[in-house]
Image (cartoon, rainbow, N blue to C red; front, side, top):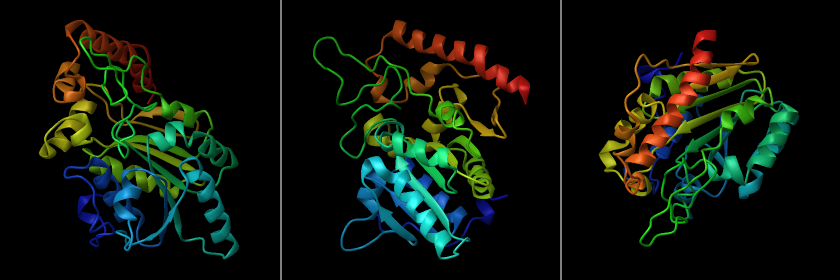
Length: 297
């Protein structure tokens, strides 16, 4: 299994224009170190496309295809078919797309590709909003977070809907492998990418990638914020294989959700009652669903 010591020494992401402390850039760097140089990367309009495929250079050490936002998975299916036609079975086709292009705009194409069972790895780097265009809410934005689509004024508002449960949507397609990960737990992330490589069909990984400017924390706190998401139970580490969902990180005791909320400006408008409501929701989810997964593994 891959770990920090065994990762490819070569940097396959370089000279890019990501923000300092970008969780998505770390997710991409680590992913490419695991899958290696013989990779065709497919991406669509998002922070990673905007910061790595700018003219006149490509800031990637692998082949890259830029797709329209709704069609990333369809493009991947075409590349898979083309490589098969050429008998190039040792090349990896990897999608690397943000949550907006995955949970929202790209969901239809992804659903079709998963249903067909095409062999690829689709990685959604989840920074929980459309960050490339200035932090608009997506289906992945959590309840209580502020975005630029949130009304301001005397009474501040926040997203009132819950974060879309993409892992269970993917699991409903019964694909070969799916998982959630976090850039703050790199060994876990690399192991899941390796499992995705070995999967006999489509594989999906959704990796939490904290965003300093839009979440509102200092650029040296990216790893800490990611850890708090996991430690408070706001982000759950799971995987799906052989028809079953299971936890991959058990929590003997969860930290209070307020520690995670208080570390970011995007939750700064919440009062004690709203913060407690989020805590109650997390508690309910763990006690009535996630702990059952824990007991079944």
